[in-house]
Image (cartoon, helix red, strand yellow):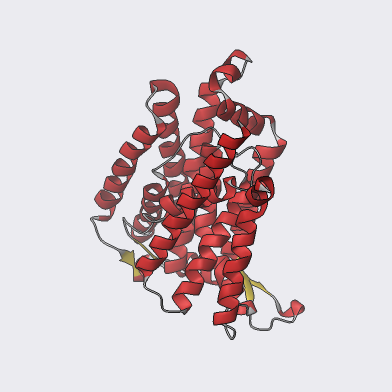
Length: 321
């Protein structure tokens, strides 16, 4: 019974949440337009959560992903405002993400600082850099090229599916591409198997010939790039960039991964399960917003859900021992 609850508890919870909002919001919640809107709303969080999954597979954390997303968006926007082409701004943002991820990985893998401490420090550093580069201001309006901001509002027309006037957002497609890419990396490559080995027992993995430091460095670097991509997606969607716009992504990303972990028999992060966690948070947010529920209530509910998920996972592991 416990195994069934562990494996399908999150899915059952997701179904119950959807049922609750479908009953209370019968005219709007399950409409194609709203479902497409949800997919677009969760796309940025999903990309960050997928990046976080790469790190949490090794039993590490990256607390800096939210501030890195903000920094990447600000860097791109500042370059746009200075007259640089969109391609240059995007490339610079991705390079910033890569550099930040490598710095995190270096601190954790080679200096030996605990991931929580190291990335807590870089969270503050990246946030400070974002404020410094932007001057503490929001960059918007004419400084953001329409070709960049319009990307998030555009998509693939769905007339052929009988959904006239609706489009599958490009942001949703990026989310799905990220899901497939991270799934392939973790489930179908030797690199992914090495990350799981490190998460299982880093010392045993090292004795088995796994280059623990190098693989940790690579995973953090990929997480930094993922955070930068999410920052660009966010800046495109709101047609602006400011030093704090990605601040809420980190906690929600960790929550999504933990929710997904409750579905794994081994209690390990799996990117497909992480998506379920993202969907739970996204649907909850969308439904509560439509019901005009105070945003603070949403925060309380998310915290309670995460505590329940982690507690149930810990209880199940204890029983297995």
